[in-house]
Image (tube, rainbow, N blue to C red; front, side, top):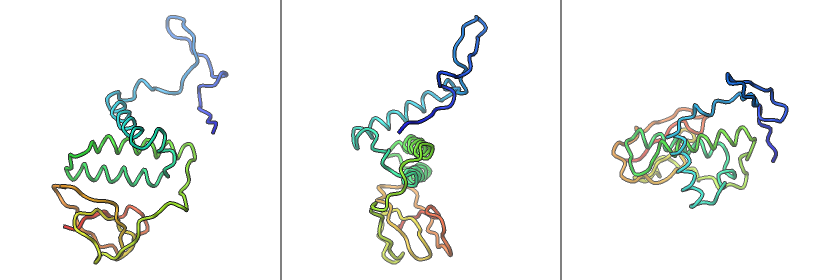
Length: 168
């Protein structure tokens, strides 16, 4: 896939600095990116590359990246300290943004979706996502979370991230 990045082509306008030095004018201020946060995201990427393979995240749809980012944000807000949740959330948001800007990949019809279950079938120690009134999908296990999520009942859920809750 060939991407076109604005402002870095050979025909970019020329800028002259105060000392008379000439170079291509850049619409970017990469020098303003936060260095510590950028390195923390790069560390998450390095660990992910070891565990799943370099650039495996390109095969994951935007919706999945956002779901995982939200789970990490909620875990951080709940006080969970077993993972670097803000770093992982930032990484997943970068991945989702890159996937969206690059136009890849689209949700895959072959992807195995979690099975919908009734609220009455929910198990303790598991994080769930509301699908529609009375129905949920299992997201994953919760390990030693200090503060529980509030259990919500939904009248109507049109969004995949309408509510997250756990069974005490």
